[in-house]
Image (cartoon, rainbow, N blue to C red; front, side, top):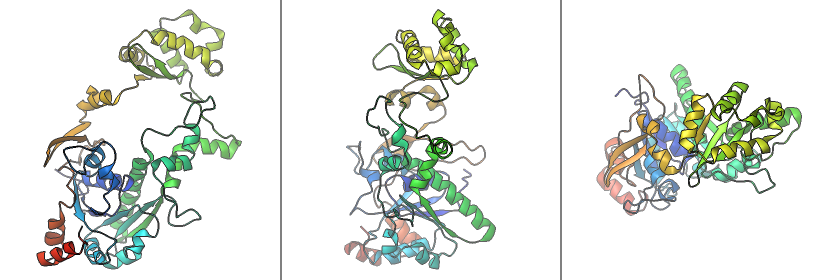
Length: 401
């Protein structure tokens, strides 16, 4: 298959989610990605919640993020590891890391050092607060980043209850794909000039793009956004409405008068919909409690999926709030190869598919996530030309570990 990044080699020193998401996307599109990890401190990507009992150091995160990737074990805390890492970098096009500023330099692997063996190297650091600034030394996870950006201040109920976090650290993969954009831009510039460069991606800064409209409103109007529950400043009705069945809900979002008329037709043109307080968006926004009560009375006796299909037929954006099971088995998702099956040493395993569909150079899931250190022999012996005796000695010293 014609894979667009097959000419590239990427070394991922990073861990957890943002760096693996960036590197994994490049691997899916053909790049040879070598993940540098260690059994002394196993990457959270491999040992977070919901691990497979039968497969050591493997969960759905690692099965998706680390597929198509090679794994070597190298303890970067050991000074002797630097020589091996430098040899590997001399063959690479891109280096990735997402540690606290100063960490990678403490290991002797900062950009100024790495560029000596690979002058046209593209290196990206995805740190929480960037490489400089008063708070550059902060350490965060995705949940803390969403607080720093102000996202949590607008996420939650409107009745004075505490803010609510996302059910997952959604900021992490978002940052990874923004990093991918930066790396591909730098590679394009290298193709033009032959020169490499260093990318300082501050996760905090990048994540603020999620709340751009709220920040612009504050900048221009001095308004501070607050929690609105499921409501929207420019749509009404807008929310989740209970349907028949256990914990069944339907999302409805009406943006225009045309969609409002479509909703009314789907409901059978109820008499209440013609009341003056609902005749335009301005009035509907100011009467949302009674509006929601009317719509809920209609949906609570109805099946969520059937009602969504009815509303969609009338041009109204609506869809059920799906459970994990429903999302996993959704026929539309499956028809687009949203899931893929790969062969693993422990048997066939289902992972996320490739969700961008390039018509001429599509990506390909070529192999399953490697076991920890699975590619030591290939990288150290075949690629770098190290002798077996040399690597055996380094393994005994705990450098290759």
